Image (cartoon, one colour):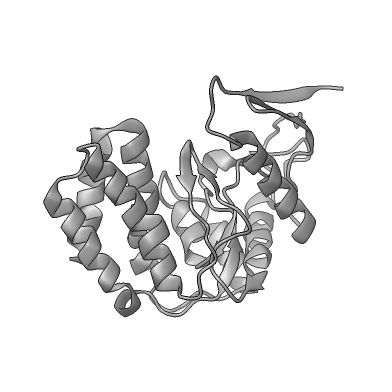
Length: 243
């Protein structure tokens, strides 16, 4: 039996356990495939080895429909049963009734304040983010608390031995479904067939494409914390767009 092992020297506390729990949760409550977890320790995660193949002809359509069905899994509150990680950054998932308060406090402000403390953001940048948080309800329409993958860029969608989608490296929680869609556009867009298939199953609110950069302020702030000042211009571009 072949095994894929992820290892990190001195990871954050319960880092790999959170990933293991996220993979299991996605698999248990939805129709998506995730790698089976064989073992989990403080510094490692042993997973089912899934050899990568070429995309099947219907790969993008299947991925779009699968994600739409994941997003149909809803809760009354925003957050998750535990905190987890996006990269090495702690992702706070305290259950919250107000979606705007959840996104403001636990996504934008928590990271912006950490970046400011590390002198990665100027005081004007922090003030612009605080101002934006006060206006979220004027920009983002109501969306249910849907189950999200949480870190859905192209590198976190594996291709199975059958050429079909496998969801990996999740940072699951319940929030606005457009957040996952936004991540698919952050580092190069998914194939248009993905978006067409998604909207055949589940419609998106009018004007969704104009909000994607706002949602991606969260991963951009995370990348600023993880990788430094090279991401500051992109953060400022988003702030200028919604100022």
